[in-house]
Amino acid sequence: SKNKPTRKRILLKLSGEALMGQADYGISADVVERLAAEIKELIESGVQVALVVGGGNIFRGVGLAGRGMDRVTGDQMGMLATVINALGLQDAIEHAGMTARVMSAIRINQVCEDYIRRRAIRHLEKGRVVIFAAGTGNPFFTTDSAASLRAVEINADLMLKATKVDGIYSADPMRDSSAKRYTHLTYDEVIDQRLSVMDTTAIVLCRDNGMPLRVFDINRAGDLARIVAGEDVGTLVDN
Ligand code: UDP
Image (cartoon, rainbow, N blue to C red):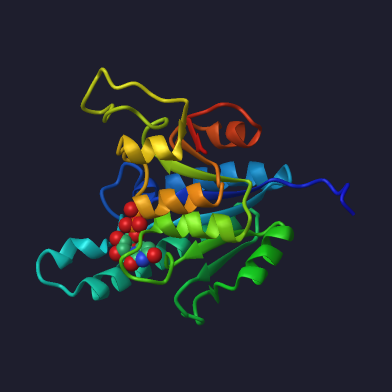
């Protein structure tokens, strides 16, 4: 019936680097454990959680393309790197007492499920954490674009992008002390001012489909729950 409570459904984009923590390579057990605990809080409060994970901590397609490697091959390696991260996250999430499913945009059936939209939504409805791996399955895209695409496809209420800073700034806050943080921006402002949030493909997909985005600091414990509870944390981007 139409009086059914509409449970919040979110899509959280985690870069590969976010999984590294203090390490300079691979996956930090401390980080994935902490993430799993924060995700558990959401799941227990009835929020449906989908993740898109990057692969930059392991491999990026453009990396060796500059040295003559075929770009498509590089991107395929990058997409496989995201599958590695997704399996690590799946393990940490299940270790924390939840159920998780990795769904890959590239068929790799011995290790995870294929991405099938209706099945993904079914998993979410059952309270399983769905981890979308292998990006969009296509070279020349990023996992940010994959996150926008999946958020729109599964009809998420909100897309969340975890970064190393607490929102979108007018300049790089690590380099420029006069940089100021925005609390709210429109997608067109992000594009016009060339603010480095996500690539333009990812931004436009959200803009054209009315998907709101919140950019926040993954290292601030509790911010994820605060955002889902409706607090004004980080930077909100919408139309
Ligand atoms: N990639 C791709 N298509 C996609 C998503 C990712 O080819 O739809 C490749 C691309 O080479 C990219 C790598 O996978 O560099 C890792 O993804 P990304 O750089 O987005 O990871 P993040 O920066 O989020 O860790």
